[in-house]
Image (cartoon, rainbow, N blue to C red; front, side, top):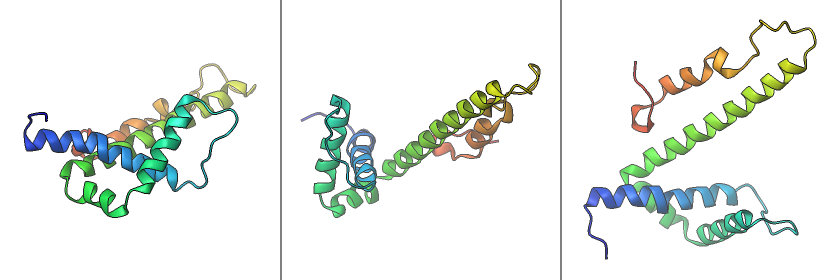
Amino acid sequence: MVEMTCRQHDIYAANSQFLTHLVGRMLGSIGDLHPTPIDTRGFESVLQIVHTTCDDSFDLFYGLYRYNAHSKSTLLCLRKALADLELRLISLELDGAALLDPARRPDEPRGTLDFLDVRDRVWNETSPAWGGRSN
């Protein structure tokens, strides 16, 4: 038994149990994830998480969400992290396309999301509960 406050317990649970179940269920909903001949240890771990979490009842997953206020902020943080990763990928894609364009002048913006200031705009519009800055 580990001694801690109720608040500490809820934060730890949201960032371990709920997060694990959320990721496992998201990946499980993708479709038929199954072992392949070239699996890495990481992918084997992913398959195990999917198997473990999807075998548990949805009521358990819902309970982790419903009865722990910190689970909602964990969900929002994951959503923001996914959006940020997607924006970074798009930024690199735009950079690559701009670099390959022979008509592009060297002083022209490369089309990065940093130039477009999209990341900061998304960040500023987010809830303070998951790290956003309020204006």
